[in-house]
Image 1 (cartoon, one colour):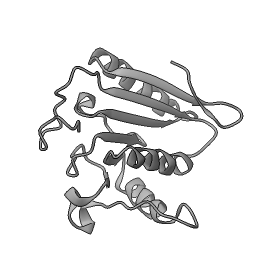
Image 2 (tube, rainbow, N blue to C red; image 1 turned 180 degrees about the vertical axis):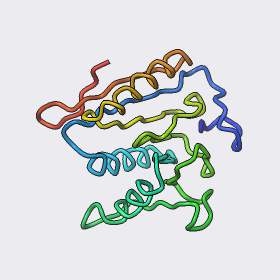
Image 3 (cartoon, rainbow, N blue to C red; image 1 turned 90 degrees about the vertical axis):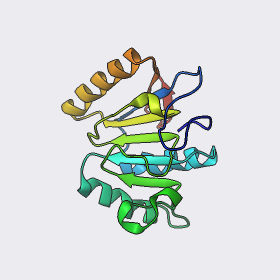
Length: 165
């Protein structure tokens, strides 16, 4: 949620258009990309909510964020682990945002709710999955029609993220 928005509603109260970034995963898996994007989000001082499409995927992400790097981990929580409002990164399968996040990550078919309610929404999708591609196209159109600033990122053969649109 934006800093100038009421803490309980995630309502955008500025003239800046909410951003929706699309990451087309072709060369790396979600598990390879999500931790670094969450780290960058936290470095900006933003809170994040990660919405997965299924409980199984949410559980897998939960486990992965504790172990993805040998020398570090990414602190996070779920509803079953205590006070959601205290979590800088919160994992869920619902559209709730109990931690007041400014950034929403949507993964594995998670249904995008009101994308205008966040400073930035990040839609990560599997480029080898036709359904995921179709969902990304639909979400792009919905976000653009809602007045969001939309950006498309794709990995180069060298593995660097490049802004394509």
